[in-house]
Length: 437
Image (cartoon, rainbow, N blue to C red):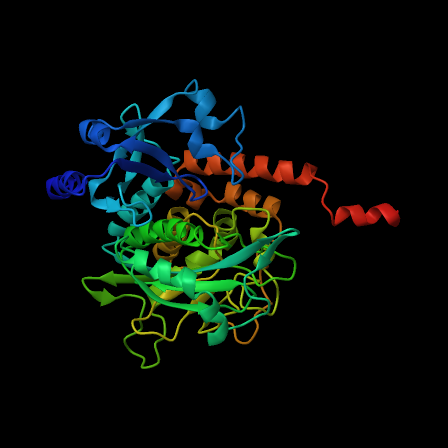
């Protein structure tokens, strides 16, 4: 903790006459959780931290949790402690009298292994052992929906890939998002209407992996708040409707040693991968099934994987090929784009999983094979069912060790409980059997 950032946080709270501070953290699903603390109480107690039920970290995507939860039973349902990180303090643009700070999560003085932000920090320490530094960038897609008497509908009626008139329909939302983004330190670079009805994509600047994970976490909160004053509902759900274009999360990674791009082959002029770059890609592909489990976290998310689309279908890679799981964009500097994650993924867990897999590839000089061309449908198919994906994660000793045994076990328990609940639900689709069988 920097004394300067702590002093700046305290001074801002006092000079801005704030009434409240949101003490926030990402849960297993990347959802913002926390407490609203009176500003004077926050100033008095922030250095000792604030109590938080450990089982909150184990909640499923629908906010349910198992009575036999890992942290609940093993700790007799105890509290952990949230420790604010002053360098993450921000004023909340949607609440004039409020600030927000992210936290570390500890139990009995030790970091909670199942806290995803800490997992990313551990993987970055592992990367540093290779004398490497990473940069990251995120592309996040989401849907704006209108609530009707019959449910939700997209805010635009048709597919409009980059059609400006469709993009302009979202101007009231985007103007508010843009106005709030700069003071919330989420520097937006562009927005466009994506391929699907009601689907948008917003990009923001690259930075360190932790900075970009924090920004993705904050961006999701910002999008939700910016939509509230409109008649629209913003959602990062992967596929809100049957046949709809799915919302993805494209993670870009750059790797440098002493300022030199280790992903690039300096002996070529056409932005080819170096041996290190190929090995990083090979590592991601080697662990693609487990990455799928961690970055496609709901029963809905795996519905992205449709052949001959711009979502991946196999554990494949290619140069500037949007149909592959890993794409090498035609960009300078050379970077690696992982296209497996769904938009609803936890950004900390996503970044940690991709980096951990890539690090393993570098250490083992993993060969990714030949790059794919055209629509790539050959090769190992990515899991289409949560059960297959979760089993792949359970069997992946490398990612279990890199991310933490506790974290992976908590994740598996939460997602299997969610899957069990889904399997027990009778859907409208199934009820079509009534008149047939």
